[in-house]
Image (cartoon, rainbow, N blue to C red; front, side, top):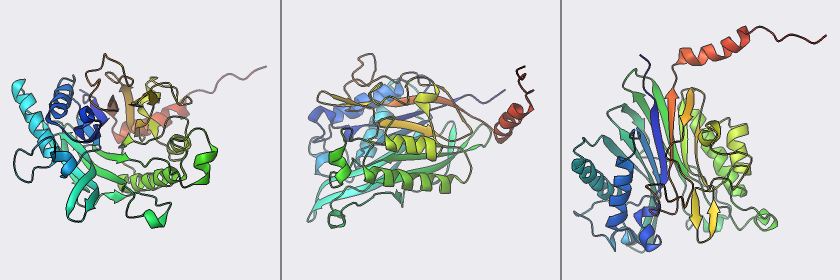
Length: 337
């Protein structure tokens, strides 16, 4: 019997502070995000989160930690435990936090940035990860502002499917906004995904992914601050050779920038979030992925982004090798007169 499909969710949670316009984290959004994730059926096997804090004034001013030293991710996982206990279901997730940046005024911690990956340990085993040293991918266009610019990283995990031991690499990231210090920023109407710094970071990301995956199947997800049809998107799909989940299942037209917004700011709607994959990943659907502002989604109003949720088959090496062989063995098409 073939292994059951796997499912991934990628979500920019805005520090669980959307209720206060991102200025401070509160308890309510953590509970609501936990409830929304736990209500997905089937449950995601991998959950990649962007914009997750460590500890800071912003993360604790409106929500006091439950215990000294509690991080924002630990507080969120506490809400996950509560949610699954209420549902009388075992809580299957183990959480990993990847620190990106720390903003301080002297000894005062103003706010922090980072990424998180939650793994369903009922279906996947963790082999390796880079929690202690996430890969830096930041491009510093202005050296003078190097210490002020928010650091960008690539979180990486190598997982093993418990059913058959097949490996799967997961990469989670959050690219920079386009730099306003480049002349091209002011000469183009479309900004997002057109920044020279964003292209540098996309190249650095692709290099890390190819090196660390070493030919094994991988997923790359996150907030790319770049819509489809942008230079960054084209680079990742056409040059790096990644496949876009939403495009593969027919949910978006990869040649259109505004067809499916995943984020919103005031009256602006933008498609900034993506899930990509390598060969060996066969996308099945993107069920329960809704455009930003769609009230049918259980995640409506919880962040300034919407999660991307997709189901896929992780194919064994034999199946991947048979695909090109099968196409080569097909009889030639009849030639014309």
